[in-house]
Amino acid sequence: VQLQASGGGLVQPGGSLRLSCAASGRTFGIGAMAWFRQAPGKEREFAAAIRWSDSASRYADSLKYRATISRDRAKITGYLQLNSLKPEDTAVYYCATTESRPITGSLAREDVYNYWGQGTQVTVSS
Image: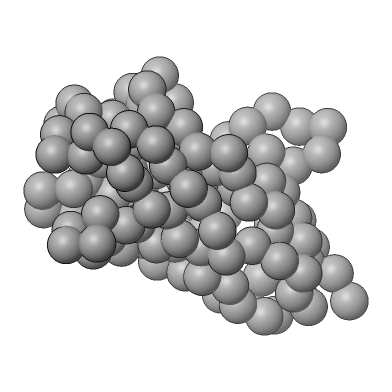
């Protein structure tokens, strides 16, 4: 599975962005898709995830009321809508998928995902 993340950019505090993650290749077995992010000088952390079959989702506490994850099964693409962005949201955002079908409680685990995209930069600054 190949993943192409896009949609990042420079946005002012309070603004919005919609990230996309297009999957190609062996995509029939996608079980879940997630977004992780890595800020400068920090470890990569979980942002949001969605189970492909039933759209069950999970969010990091820091994004719970400001982000929406979704997927288009026909386009084999996942999306992360980010609203009310803050400077602390600045990071490289990576999408990832797995062929397993994790339970909701496991959607945030990085070791669940075995395919990773190249990342898209999100910078929140005035």
